[in-house]
Length: 254
Image 1 (cartoon, rainbow, N blue to C red):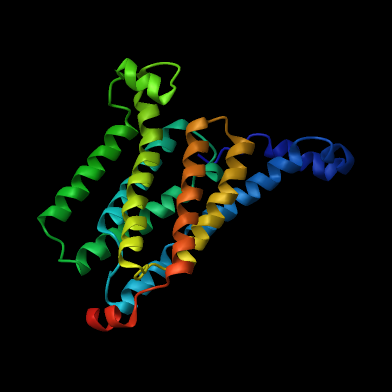
Image 2: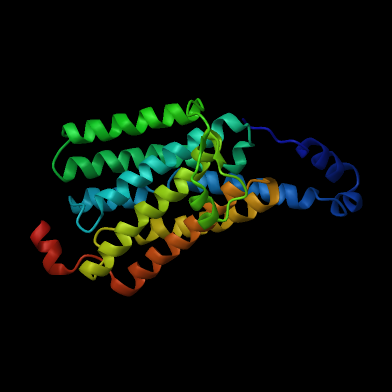
């Protein structure tokens, strides 16, 4: 899980021959590892400002339930995708911390918008079951219609469970962010969305883009990072341009 292939050799070269060290790929490897673990460390607290803002306001005004749900499921599926692959923890570990925080946000949003009803338990159970199925790679390979393959520009029409697990978070991230983006435009404010959380999301996605390019030959992981960066940039721009909950809405919620 914490495989650091080549790290020992690089550190040995750094200690024994600095000139030779600088002429190899080792500097990039060490920088990538450092950035990767910095992203993971930052991810441990990235959702905390959002959780605290909701707690202080006592409201989830302006925060889309669909966005919260799909982000929770997306991180769950992301962990299910990466765990069996044996990639270094530095290349995906933030997803584990994000899953814990998105779970807390999902529960908090459900609690403040009607209570933990049967619908919440059904959603949560279905999400966990889906994560387990994808982690165990229990979905058999399936074939997409030729028309869909042509429209998507795919080289082959057969989709494996691993490819499904890697692609789903991108689709869920897109589906999850679009309702929030649309809701922000419709209500002309961004409600209780925490600016610092989305700014950290942008910074983390930018850093993860570098480590993915440096350490992984995985187009699915790369596409997911690029999509995440773009969608978070849109929400950061909305927070800056539209602002938070208007005073009238805030007073009404209080």
